[in-house]
Image 1 (cartoon, rainbow, N blue to C red):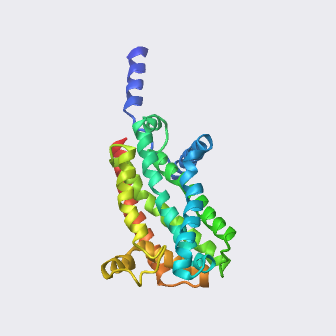
Image 2: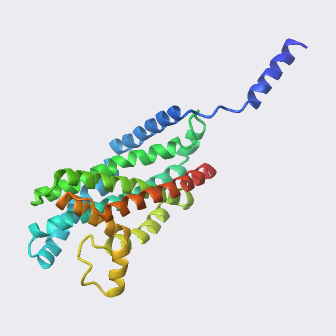
Image 3: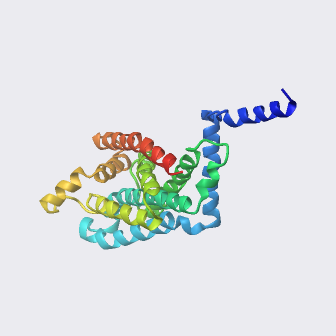
Length: 274
């Protein structure tokens, strides 16, 4: 056998040899690197943080002025109920950006370039969702800061911190749903439209802004079983009394189930798409 023939066969074997799957540590490292890329995008385009910086200021000030006197008699009396409600509303609404940005990156061919790199195929998806956790943290901090400037004083600071962590965890779990929509929907505006069609009723037909006692019976029933209402009540219990009730348990169980169900579905859809 000539040297040329041996070299040809060696090259053929190398082409036929499958690539080894990246290890867990390599996948985690690549995901962190791509999460840093997501944060770098925010640095170059600060307007991506508009919904988690400006929106909390507007919503907290606006709803305090509109509903404070009518519901609680004064703005200061209304803030212990309003701040947890706006905190949940802003964080849940911010999860839409996950699907919008993911769909936009896929349309522009960014993930096609990632596919040619020697990294785990799920690393870009996990990195994008991890970067969005920073946005949820910023949203939570902005709502609390605006509330403090307006006179809000929680009875339990550790409870408020745990409530913020619960909201961030729930938002991360919910972001897998919008990641799936970002992969399956044809365009970023379609993702945003479909997401808001679901989120707007969920966030407003709840106890986030007003008590459910005086709502029509059928709306009250929807508000009482709404997961957003359970999450808002859980944060109010933690921040107001420092106690752990069943609403916290339901919120944790619901968020975990959403992530356990939607994460594999979103990953499978993403791998098929890319």
